[in-house]
Image 1 (cartoon, helix red, strand yellow):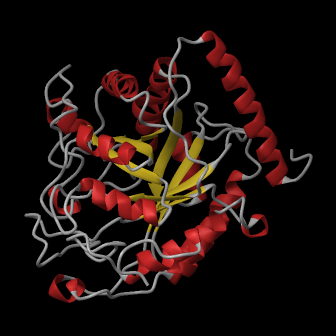
Image 2: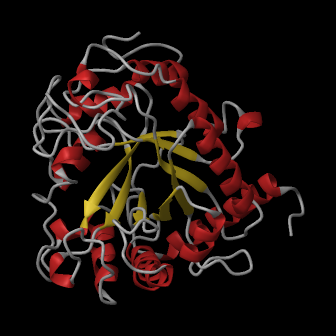
Image 3: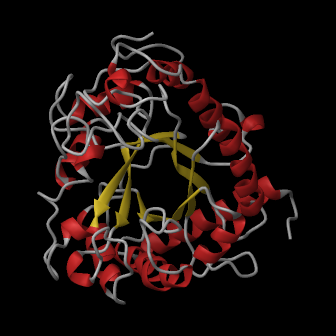
Length: 374
């Protein structure tokens, strides 16, 4: 029951959670918490190791100029633990080559270092079952019990000072990312993953279930909702939303209404949303500064900006744009990008800017810092 209204109730729940966490930390082993930016803005994307401007850090500098303080980074389990019990953080890539812009994918360690050097706070996404555990060609099959728990614990310990939020899987409501049931997700990923992370690094926050365009039934199933609480306590409910601006707003209103009265829903983040720039792929997506001006992105992020516009906060606590850059083709080429998402970027695949990063930057900072804007 809401005694003070749903928004105030949520703040009270957050304050109680913070107080409990502070008390817990007094008795836990000493640790340095990872940076946790109060900013409401973030971005997805894996910059390539080359490009114009060159390097991973330059792409994160563009994000810094646009005041996109959060970066969401994939930790592909199948690459990191390619064999049983051997964790490879320094050479494992951060995603498929075609999502890594020009020059191929950096390693997990390279990307973490670049994000920290650019002052970004980090959401780490633990996802994709290893081949040796029966993950299959798409690494989407449920793993045997116990293995994800170990992986989550190792990741949390390895990056305790770097990753502020751990997100448990990516879009498990889509069969290409998770071939199992919602119950299997809860029992094999959500519950053991959350418990392992909290035991290893109590200050770390946990987000889930990162479902795509979810109905409230989907959220109930993947989080195991009962009496307003979840199968296991989490810090952040995370969702992804795509389609038209109207579709994203309508879905957001529905998720916000679902979240507000639930004691278990302390916070809600949109960890992916985005809109196409040009409506085409290939060479036509690679012209001079082009594409949608970014009003669609601003329409969504302004609804999540609590401090600056409290009367406009209809739902989420943070919004993370997909994607930092356009998609390349499957061999990492910058000259002829293709495939779904080839023109979702704030930057083109070679690192040069699109108009919409200028629009986002002006909204978040009130000025233009990125070379080439406006």
